[in-house]
Image 1 (tube, one colour):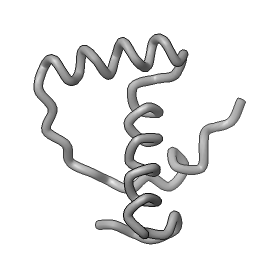
Image 2 (cartoon, helix red, strand yellow):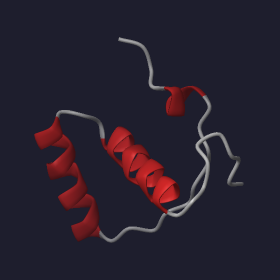
Image 3 (cartoon, rainbow, N blue to C red):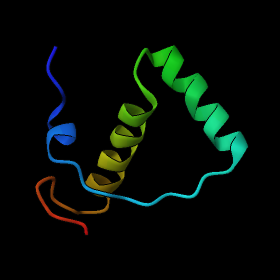
Length: 60
């Protein structure tokens, strides 16, 4: 299985998360059988799409 498109051309995003949020995210990722970085990428993709940003746009 190849890498998702978002991992081939990543956009750098700085996030500050507390310990509880990271633990919850790891549990969700385990349940969904994906890596933590894939889960965060999916969340950010959905956020940007919902807020009217195009997929190919550079956010840096």
